[in-house]
Image (cartoon, rainbow, N blue to C red; front, side, top):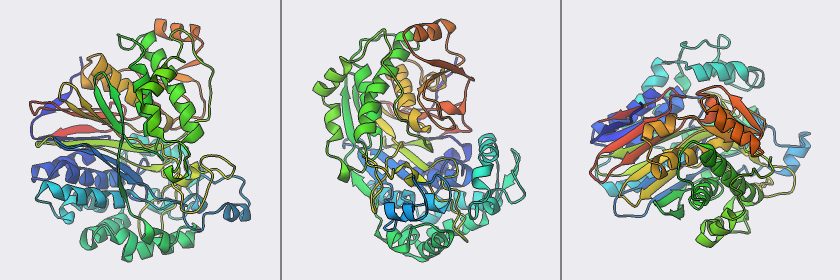
Length: 527
């Protein structure tokens, strides 16, 4: 039987052990959960560069006892030069997914670190930035062994990435590196050192900003220094859904956080009482369909939306949507899918503060572009824009649709639970599986993360839109799903396709519980 790790002094869970340990070290030095997360975020940008980086975006949920949770939206808009005419002039009928023309949005992650640290000043004593970034700088200078997933994705995406400016020199100077090869990133170490010395604002309005802007322009990106200078991360009100078990929070648009909340809000109304059988999987899959239909139709930059996503989470709206779900029959599918790669991490400190955080460069290695002299791979989040009419039509200064969505729950029994995953289209589905198993059906937290998962639609590394289930799902359950009309594909056990999930839970007695995904390379580092 699997058991969660528990402790009292604080915990960080991350999909790479060095990131979790970087955050835990900050807790040991007296730092709070936000500071620990900044250290973990910087470290994982170094040690897991195929999944995230400081050239990407981030989203925060921060909970402290006695206050409502706050959210930080740290995603950058499209460049001022990123127009439909710009892409038409370069011969594109769609925004490209790789290369300099895919690097069309500002990277917001570092701005999010800054906003989170500013917010955390309310907690009292703050550790200096050089301390928070020390592990990340050391790992970039000394090097870290390349993980299995980084090796496999470098190999599988080599034809798309090898010729992108700066990519091979940064990640594969001697050709596709084998698993275990030590990767040193001196330019990234220098960039992080610059931020440690000059402050995080240097990324947008200092010397590093000038270097980034020059490198992006030289590579052919439409991003300019004025785009970087104009960016500020925003503290925003999170979305919330009320369940019988408590309140669950997530990010508002342009993220798909509303989908994650809708899925569990709908499932809460279906009267299902047991985990992992036909009823559980079918109910969540059908709830996913209802949530994704609304998401695909409407979710984009909130400044460009004509509807309020929070209305979809009202009790009457969820009641009406739940009545559309047939408990024995699959609704027609597919609908358009949303891809994406990322990492999720959670942190909790001894004072009961909890952070749910997600950081991403969109596809594996993002655009593949590494601006000269920076070591920073730039995201391709703007590839989610369309040049056709629709909710996500490209406009200058517009926020793109985001698959990113960290979750946080405050339960009626007094627990605070932060949970999330990577995996694009699969993120809200995996979150729903973990939440319902643990909160509704009482599974051990680690068991809820490790148990067999499923996925409707396209996700990380896949293009099909059927219902994929891991091979550990019982044959009788798979047969029942097929008989209900689901197009089921059985995939390998513990596949990366199902995301890298994790969770941290603070109990009313101060015990901190954590779980990490055996599909990843992570740990729960506790004190």
